[in-house]
Image (tube, rainbow, N blue to C red; front, side, top):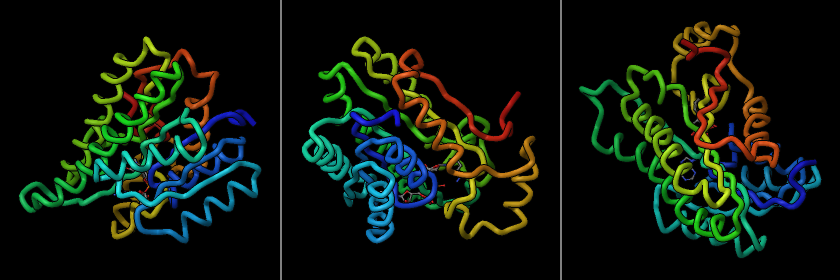
Length: 248
Ligand SMILES: NC(=O)c1ccc[n+]([C@@H]2O[C@H](COP(=O)([O-])OP(=O)(O)OC[C@H]3O[C@@H](n4cnc5c(N)ncnc54)[C@H](O)[C@@H]3O)[C@@H](O)[C@H]2O)c1
């Protein structure tokens, strides 16, 4: 139980990797605000599971592609639990397509949801964290942001953008003891792969040196470590959790 006195916000916490992170932090005693956009029932279920595991939780609806809703989310956490120590920018979407067919709306939706949300939530959170001289911001990026992925120019750009953002913000806020890191995920079994044909999924998983896709709970353990007091001397880092897919 490493997070008894810690308040955390996890964006997109109702399913997949965000759900696993919310449950991990909550089961280690954190008060977790589970953000969701549409799936209220799923978010409530995560909140309940956190409470059953000994943590505290609240759910908050916000579309993180919208700046003012990010502001409302962070302000809610600070008001509801009285503080904010950990922000996990996890919410993300894909709108895949080769560039010749990619619509402007597909570009904008992915950049706004994956990258602008990271800016917006961090901007509001960091003001509080800097004042308190404590903070952990963790951005869930992707190996697509490191090595690219055909058919995902929008997604890869958003994820590479999160990495540049992580390093720049880490430098800005380091004097106030706030750390900013990114976790670059490889292939994890979540609903983000819905609609991607099985053969493509399987061939991607086949490229993983460790020979399998990841379990969101494995990623959540890594995020929990970076969010912990033990990781106080790590900032501006991009940690790949990808079974070796991006090693070079
Ligand atoms: N699953 C993978 O293989 C993988 C690989 C690399 C990176 N990632 C990243 O991990 C993160 C989580 O992905 P996942 O695999 O759990 O996918 P997922 O689709 O299961 O979950 C994404 C979550 O984000 C939420 N979300 C989407 N748009 C939102 C919005 N506008 N406002 C608030 N919430 C919103 C969804 O409701 C959902 O809860 C994403 O940033 C994704 O890019 C995933």
